[in-house]
Length: 192
Length: 293
Image 1 (cartoon, chains in turn purple, orange):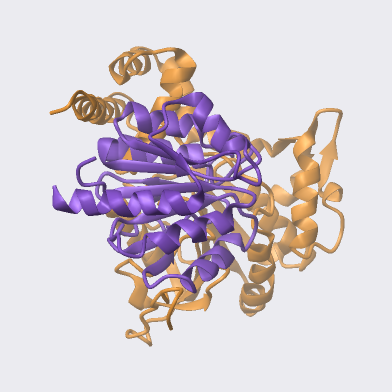
Image 2 (tube, helix red, strand yellow):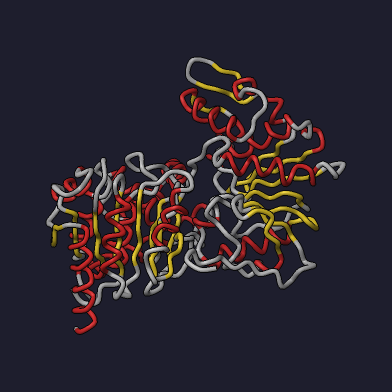
């Protein structure tokens, strides 16, 4: 993939450990990362705090019209859907839950695929529902890249499995391996 | 241009044409709404109506007024709950009510009131604080269908349990059902709660200040506007406020990136409550990055 412009990681139950494992391996990539995890009240702030302790990158809770900057990690705020605008900023949406989820991973993935097309990378890890499968399909259709945690390794395999059932997957591995893969890809992108 | 980006470029063009058409034919101005936000609603309509393009949708909408009504039902976000974000309502009672009580009479404006849940939630709180008589409440929205629904004050009985839970968390002192007339499927707000409320159409893109307001709630409205309309709206809201008047935004909205930031002081970060404060022009709020102070 030339020049990936955004990495969107979707997670649910059991996700934090995986997200941290991925981020541990991607310290050297400057591609902006959006983390969408199903969280309850106060959850996005806790998640952002947990992530900020483990990275040198700046960590923000995505806010409406906030610019998406390199070398930054963004956490989707609870109780909103996080989308992306064509001008490189975030767009928040407070409409209905999608498959009982808000933030919905499908919504974020679909939005990233619409705006970033073949420069979008979607990553799906542990979770006990099927949110994210449709979104991964959208990413694939737009020419982006799809990575999933190996369901055999996930605490809650339904989510990564739903992606595998929905569309072609470019890479399947442990969370750590996903992180390494992302790191390698961004280096190649920088070279090309 | 790749097929995909060519398609997207066409989609964006067709969307712009549709909204221009709606404005010219029906007079409703959604042209300043966030592009991505509008596209999301349009795509849902394409699925629902089985249209294969926005051009097709445009023809359907412009052809007949009754089709436009269907469009109007779906184009603005009317998702709402009573006492949504209970913590916010609690803070309104604790931080704003004492101030309002110092006025012999005061005015509240729900800018973008949608189907009324927020309006009735605040009305209930005012009633419980014995402040209703002194209040004049303006509830406005661009969407006449949402306003009709808000005026009627009818909610599904099945939502009442979630509403009650929110009400209790917000510090409600009675029981939510005492404010409703309930039948098998619906719960209708007690008309006494509407006595101080005026509902009417107002478009934040084109309409102006209509009164001096002590408390403005504009929650989860700005996120659907583009940058320019957001700026216009914030300026309008600022000019509508009485000295020291309060502005309340949605739980993930902020004044921080806006031009009016310097005209306000932050009353509550968690509640997204601000007060007009010209005295302190340099009070710029900086959002702290999470990993360093």
